[in-house]
Amino acid sequence: MFIGEYSHSIDPKRRLALPSKFRGELGSRVVVTRGLDRSLFVYPMKVWEALAEKLGAMPVGESGTRSFVRLQLAGATDVELDSQGRILIPDYLKEYAGLGKNVIVVGLFNRLELWDEDAWKSYKTDAEKSAGEVAEELGKLGVY
Image 1 (cartoon, one colour):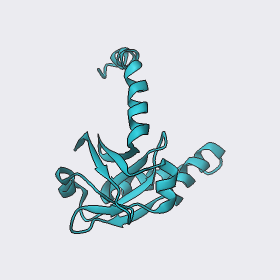
Image 2 (spheres, rainbow, N blue to C red):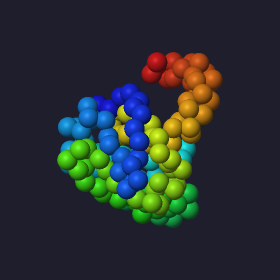
Image 3 (cartoon, rainbow, N blue to C red):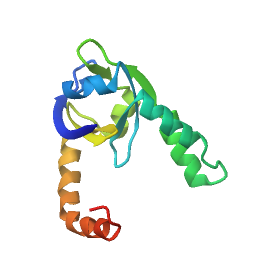
Image 4 (cartoon, rainbow, N blue to C red):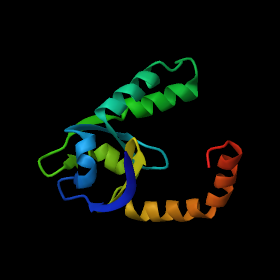
């Protein structure tokens, strides 16, 4: 399980070291794809395969579904962790997420998210403002 947030840097060769505590669970290859809110999602291969199968089974007759599936699948790339636990972030994904030198790696149960440091701070500030309201709604659903 992935939890927590960690600050890392992208080197000049577009390599990003993933937190050492996650590397065993990630394995030697991961999939990086466009995430939501201008982030990138990083999936262990097993999790990605299950998700890709669900996405591939989505109805192609609905334009919104088609667009989302295209962004997720066509935007995905599988990458190998090097001996130092680094992954190479392709230019198109780096640009999509607006990643600068400083990146926040966020653990979210079965995936990681990669955020530009400033974008993460801004997002987190906004999310914290509505956390109480969200907790109330989750309480109504019996989740929280």
